[in-house]
Length: 215
Image (cartoon, helix red, strand yellow):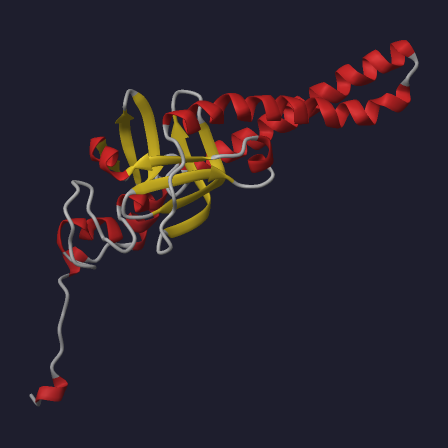
């Protein structure tokens, strides 16, 4: 047999049948392939929609009783906005006091529409701008939420040492920082420019102990 005619055969035992493949697809764990941030974001959207529906019903009932139907539209808009404004400030202001804003390095890695959980009730889904540099992880709210609760929370990179990496339903850093429960996207574990790993050591780009965070 000539060299160009060589063939490589795979044992049949390693090739799953069509029936096995179908069974495997039907037994996939519930929720596999779904991002928890997307599920939480959907829940937040449904919650806001339900709030607005209840708001409309209450306002309509009150206005029909008083006869001032013309005030329905302003109240329908003002009441949810006031509620969201108060909620955002109550959740965000303690964070920016705990982690005061620090200057962002010019070479910081920046991503929008990010999700994080800071504290028991501080779940921010797809509404954050996160910037990661050699010394801090900076978080701020995207507009229009940024108008309601302005300010930046800058978490010192050294405090990320207390977090563990979890890859269930995505890739995240989970743990506690100064007693605060934290849930961050795993990509913030690598610093821009300095390429500092989670344990504080500095490594060459693409090598060393920080390499697993780039996969």
